[in-house]
Length: 184
Image 1 (cartoon, helix red, strand yellow):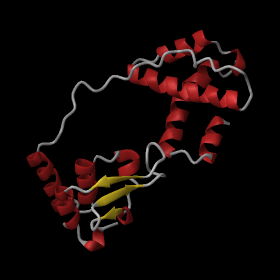
Image 2 (cartoon, rainbow, N blue to C red):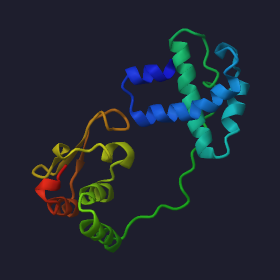
Image 3 (cartoon, rainbow, N blue to C red):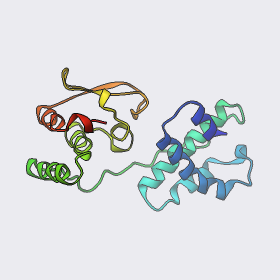
Image 4 (cartoon, rainbow, N blue to C red):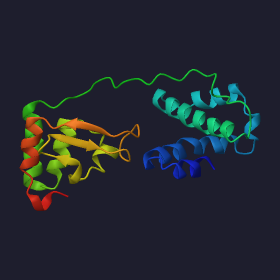
């Protein structure tokens, strides 16, 4: 019912997929119990049994949302996850950033081997759109070379808000290099 509700609210497919993925083990472990009987200790133990901090944080978010839905739906009065501290997500040990020469090499290779990827890669490298939703669903109609803005729509945005991203000169040059017939 929670997943159907997310679909009705038009939540992003990655959100629904993640909820399904992270709640399946909970249903496997506690599916024979009445949801209102789940204690804070049981919820906390289930969250913490995940093998990485990242998975613990994902389990926390998914379970908290599930019980929040149950409270809103008046299936029970209390969210057992509400009193649990969210596991801190660790940032990666190392973040790599392309040098200008590396970025150029990637884009030149794309021009030679798969020209349709040039715009995708250039926007990802120079505008920083999120690859799984914002970038993957970007349409050329959202790119305005005249105003120098990329429109990230509500349906693709992580936080369900429209925002505009500046097109820097290097990105503009790469986008202009894409032939009109390939601007899809």
